[in-house]
Image (cartoon, rainbow, N blue to C red; front, side):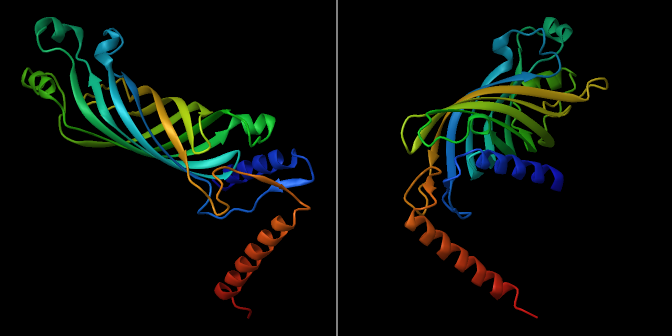
Length: 266
């Protein structure tokens, strides 16, 4: 884990060094450069018996809420919660036997933490006025399956092995998004992701099928929170700027004083 974080910091440093030598990012603290996002989209289940089913039987709607902290224009962390309904299918023999029941549904909440990497800023450097950005993310967390509908209970009563009890499963997720600045405070983001989890996520387990997965495509709004400079995005300043020196000096002094309080000289 330490090696991964070291490589991320080195990447961010190399992106900063690629900028002109007479400018630098303003100093920021942890409470700055936060974003919050909301959105909705479609989730498509890829699990047992879904391969031969029509698209509509595997697709459902979901919503998401996000909070992200950007440590640098290239690197950030994001916490996300997704809520929605997922679909499941039984095998073809059971469908032919009971054609009036159809696919079943269940509710799912997921909670995960993601590492964000702004690919546009990594390749081209950070531009304060850029309107479009491409970013990738990877992360993991937990998901909770519950609230199986009447169709699932009907299949269960017909001896199809669906576990309708609430279950919690680990998950890993990776994806990318394109964001467009529509206002200094708001960006519009189109996002796609692939999630993999264990076999019990949809209530059905197969011995030769250790993992289930789903993919989702979402459209959302990202709100950029104002920082201590009354700005909502990273800003560069010239090294000759007296204001920059003043702010930097005061923050360094406060940090040094806090360090001395927490680590008194021996």
